[in-house]
Length: 71
Image (tube, rainbow, N blue to C red):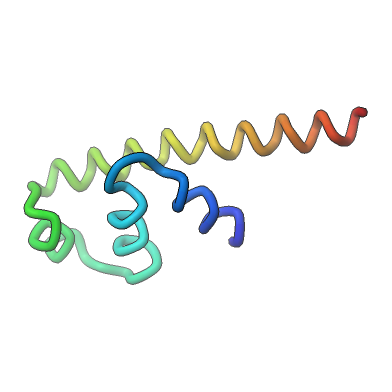
């Protein structure tokens, strides 16, 4: 869970705050829409972009750990 927090903090733009509100605060999408002044579909796009970025962050971590183990 610590690395997930680390990864969320490294997301681009306003994604860290949106994802913190969504995941850690459990904020409903309607509240997110109101807070950030965006549409429902935009919240979905933020979520998808965050997932893509987190995949990259986790891939980098995995490759780094593998390199250390093999060295």
